[in-house]
Image (cartoon, rainbow, N blue to C red; front, top):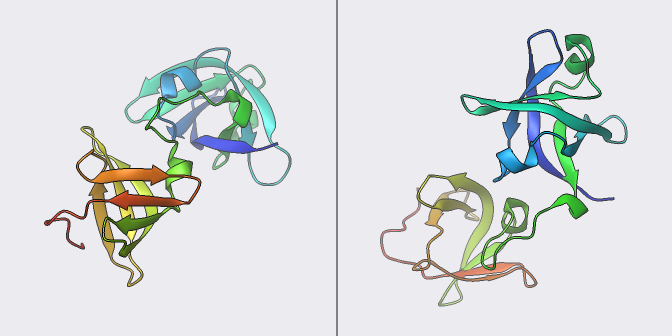
Length: 171
């Protein structure tokens, strides 16, 4: 079964088994809603199924408790572990939108078929995402994810075609 990361347990919170989670999903309020199932993967054994008991936000973190974890001692062993979902749990996305895991690793080409590099990271900026393109020389290009720049995303071919606008210089 394929699992996909939706967050990382960064610490415990209090003595009742609550954990602090750094979300890596675009849909934290839906993904971490009460009653939702996630899997905790600490890399040592098969992922453990957990049912979300409570969810609240605190600063940039999600605070969660689970039906299966009752105190800090049980929660402590999962510090640093990934929270994951199965492929069947993924929500279908609107046309023209993608999961980060689908974008990271794609090769980027200009309209003139010049190879620019590979997507290494997705940054959220508020107005639009920015895709970080790692060049072969190690430098980076920041591509705003807007229609004027991103012309085609071809997941089957593993590539993105961009309109290399003047001003999108290497960092």
